[in-house]
Length: 414
Image 1 (cartoon, one colour):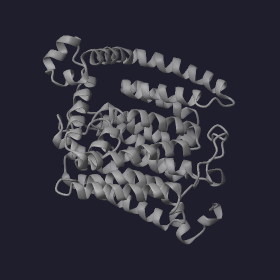
Image 2: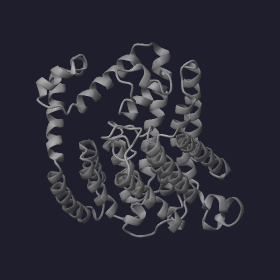
Image 3: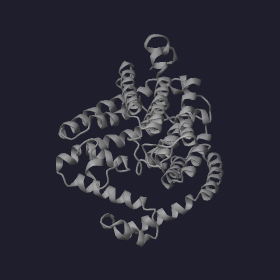
């Protein structure tokens, strides 16, 4: 097992700078996106995409250059790469190489991050705060020429924004302590997104109940106070109004069945529900359509999907399905989906920083209704930093604040 001394000089110097380089690259990508949405110039879109590819290749280099190529994280990279390759070959005429690489980046950056369990530097932290500031700055000084006027900064919608800020909070969790969870409640309330709020509450409940640990009641009391404060903010922002609409939508979906909902026109749905807030219904229609396509194409499609990146071209709406589990299943097949779910469970069990683990559970729940894979910055932050916080020797070279580290968790096998 490596220790802090293994980071002196040579390759160790490169690995010691991994997270600073990643954070700086993400700043460059988001600045380029910022300018792209201000000007609609394809040049800056190209710059952002090019740096994204370099970041993935750099992470792959860090992983391959480490001495931990046979860890569980590395085995997931190898297995996922093999299965994605099989899916790509099975759908050679339609599968997107870029989408395949983007999906595999989840595994690669986690393995790279896990090989670099180093302390967060001031420069790296400043990059993370810069990422938080950029969308806010965009709101103050510009409007997007790429997305419609109702978009949130250069982020396409509030769902994406909630995910984006959650990812930054996840990366900063060792520094923020329980404050990361408070800010996550504020994030969900400000974005007025029911999915983010429900995912946050559910994640905290799961952490408090399973398993019961020393200090749980004290932490629970603190979090109840946070919930009350967040609830007041949410009430003032009208979140509970949307929550009531969502609950009514779910009841109607259960009563009518998804297949029936999927055939109903927009006007009829508005008349039945009495509201134009039909995001839940559109998700159900989209999911049902994707599931129908996936299950009607034969055994090859069941095992290997109908091609990376094809959901937005084949389904009811020209959009990804707002459900990463369904997307991986439909585009890459059952084998890839099984590995993906197993990988997520491996990650959440391995993360040692308590509040980060809660935020990762938030992500796992939120992925049932949102697209992490299409949000590159959020994806990289979540999985690269999860790797760092899952490293077996985190206590040696990482954060040691008692509030940050869940010391009752036994390290996952390397």
